[in-house]
Image (tube, rainbow, N blue to C red; front, side, top):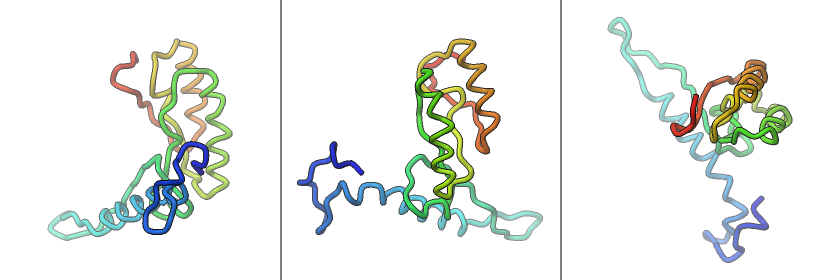
Length: 138
């Protein structure tokens, strides 16, 4: 809830924006999922539906029906790496069992030790990917 950062004056129809802001996550996931399910590919001369994989960091209650999420862009800071386990545990308890993070982190240059620790933790999560900002050194 964005009570401390969003203005009460932003109103959409009769709803305050801060109360419906996160609905974007499920609406985008649902429409993307439906589009991916409708697409067909031709294999061996036969049209087939293909399984979809939708990854987002914007989500809301029920979004796990349509795809999965990762905890978003983090910095190469020990305070961030300490939050990976509790954050993914929390969203797993909420129904997103396929959770992960950008390993070792998305922003800033990691030290060799930070990189090693990030990969050691990352390999224990269901979703594991080495991913970073293009400006970081890898």
